[in-house]
Length: 127
Image 1 (cartoon, rainbow, N blue to C red):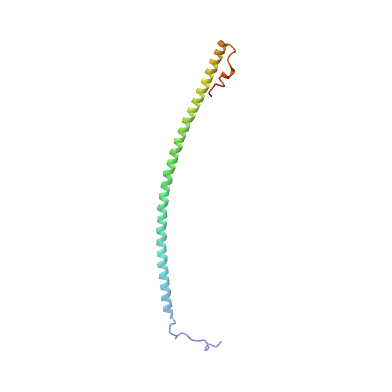
Image 2: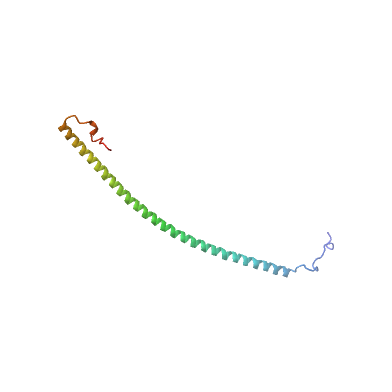
């Protein structure tokens, strides 16, 4: 193609000069930097808010852990008390059965074999 056939647009109105293009690019970069600075500021505020929320939740978690530990300790002490009372109750029950069996045997000796077997200590009435 002949260089004379290429249209020369340098003298057209509205065609930006290289200096005008550089200025425009600088303005676009400045706007982008301002936008990014605004976004960065907002992100920092969001992060600070999240850190505060995390601290509050960590404090609540520690409080609940302490409460759970206290409840477990209370449950353990009540369970020990329950086991102690159950053992005492079983011991008293066995002692009572032994006494009933012994008294039954004494009564049987005095009364002879006329006592019914249902009175035996292993099957006391009402239990």
